[in-house]
Image (cartoon, rainbow, N blue to C red; front, top):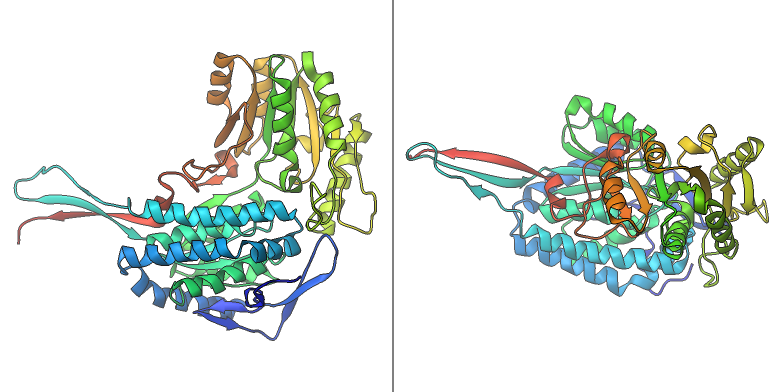
Length: 482
């Protein structure tokens, strides 16, 4: 991996503005080439306690820093990220494997998010309330919640850090980031740029580790950590939910999805096919809002399946540094094995393999873009979060059946619906049990649009006009004359 600025490749932990080495290290591997990218410090529970102490010390100054000082530093951080987009995207591509153009887009989104948070921070204001008692003045103020722990995933290793830590820092909180052991390098590179931007030591700390359970346990039990924000599996999210109970932390959980993608007979097929490819195969299908279940009405099922398979067959899996690659590798061998089992089980139960289905070379982590038709709800894939480049097609007869199938899950993160009937679209948007619904569109992210799940897909919202309220406490002040 070649960078224009090698100092952005940090391999030590980052606590209180200082690189932290440890006796143990773990290996970061490029999933496209299976070559070693870096050896990274493997921090442990003692380092967590050091980071909590550092964040607590920094909080005393950062929360009371003038708003202009905080926002100036955040704008500088965003500018440095923008200016180093080539190096930062290279780091993501090397440790995650996604196509370089997608990595560049993720980095630019990080800079845009920081600017958005800085803009919204100016609106974090309390209120003066109407007088109820003679002579008494009632008001509210918003104060930073405190030290925030951010546990982030590997599939969007940059954006997931900034959407949590960036928002927290903008409100005056301090942060401890525990990145995935598969992709710790981008979170560490952000630490270097945060330091250059003038964000004080201890405000942004990074704890790379190979054993996340030990780190997570310390973050959960510490009374000095007042909030935990996690993106990852529903299983782990539930464990964290329980572990944080004794300290009654605020939780933000963005968990697994099982998104339905409904296509009615009267849909614009070209538009639906465009959305169908993007909603499943972006980021190699390793995305929580990815379309898991394509529910297609009987009248167009065969045509939709044939045309989708033709499009998917043209997608090329390859090294993210190759401009010809449409999708990158899976993150590890376990993902390959899980996808292989999914296809084998479905076809053994009667599913029709229209394209793909396995690997061209089993020594790699590339999985062929795949379309499975004639799927049925009794197949394990119906309830699974696929997290890979496999589109599963199911048939339905009418609107009632489509909605019943769509909502037959405990997940509720995203859903999509395509039709030319405006009233039907309105009915479906209201009835679908998901935190975000794409209506004739698969573009469901915007800085001013709240994002999060319902049911077992999580708690809280990221992005949106009120996104920073997750990181503040509202205090009521009832003041009588002295």
